[in-house]
Length: 253
Image 1 (cartoon, rainbow, N blue to C red):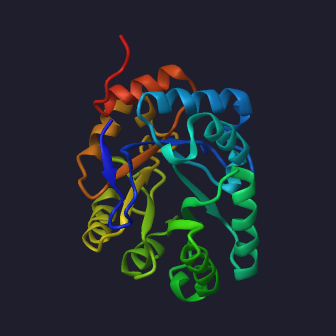
Image 2 (cartoon, one colour):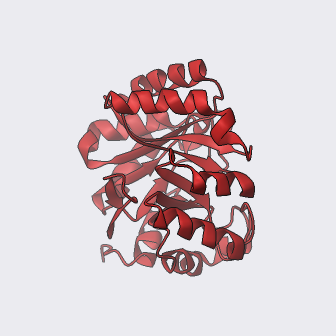
């Protein structure tokens, strides 16, 4: 498994990230529906094969599943992203304190402002940003950033001096993206040039026919140097091994 640097964050992790939020919202996801024991096992299985980057969020309802897996593999061996949809300083502060407890950890690697759609968010979200920066100064968060679901919001993230990590929707078809790849890729490149970490989501297009051609979708994203890593929601051992093979990682015979 390739180990990559997420921009200038100082975080090095696996290129392939285990996503736990397929159709994730309202505190549930496809992965969460597997149950704590089963998803924790799959996270450990992937970890044994080099997947040291795990993506979760409050809205996915998978904090308990990730916590169970972390207890088995060791906290220091995994990079964990989680996300908050809260939009006020007090709510974000309460979220982070809760997340630490739910994940059973003394620190969070990456915390993202989740599902940003406001083009003016660097101004309107200053309070939540300040709270995350305060937690970071205390050593409770390693890196901060956002996931955007609007093209102008994505451009604002690229221009921001606060953002350290971006979770960006990217695939060759433009399906479930902020805009087509011809528009999004230059924004991603500007993020990378600025030293921001970038990892991709919706690599399979979130229901497009790319789900039938996963290797081609992965090849496309791996061909973008400015995309440092990417998250894929995986549901069983076969999907994990197939994605490992697609990224060029060794798999058992």
